[in-house]
Image 1 (tube, rainbow, N blue to C red):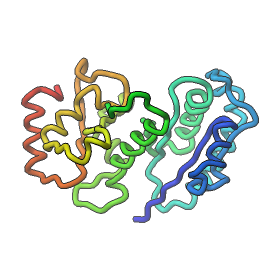
Image 2: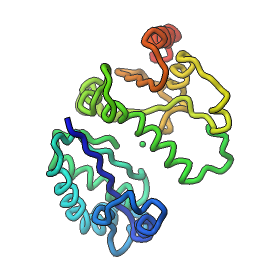
Image 3: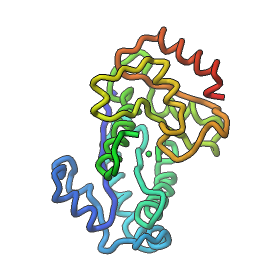
Image 4: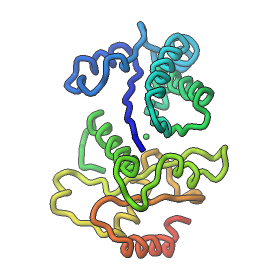
Length: 237
């Protein structure tokens, strides 16, 4: 099955201009870099009802043209801030419109010894998580799953559809070359609050479904033992 990857940026004019002239400008098609004439001034109402409303149709038109070229569109990976105007206001408006036009498609809405983390550090961490999450879409394997299977197996009820990602081990580049972690240690770390991609403590609630994805030199025997140990320690209660 043919698979396509599309990168699309929506943002304020100054931010998009940095991408247009930056070191990675060759990664993005100019037509897919969309910006308005003014920003949303960190105001949700402006991003959702005024400036966002003026540009959302153009965004959907670009998405529609790209989607027409797909042989098997599985879903959308949307990265937006949860505060402010452009990220939250326009982001939520875009998700609403995508739900109308592509209701059956999936929408996934993302401790390194760094004293002062930069946006580059954060973006690289997020990109590593997404790379691991979509690895089964890009590589062949007997146990690989696609976006639809994620949604089917992890969403118990339609209204309980917000999934939480974690990533382990997250270690500094200096430690990566000489520290080794067992499968059990990686599994236990994945359930720690510090490994979550959102600021929450799952230990205060219950896991209704869980999917563990391992990359690297890992054998099923070690995975089964690690999962059994995690359940035995009630890490996933």
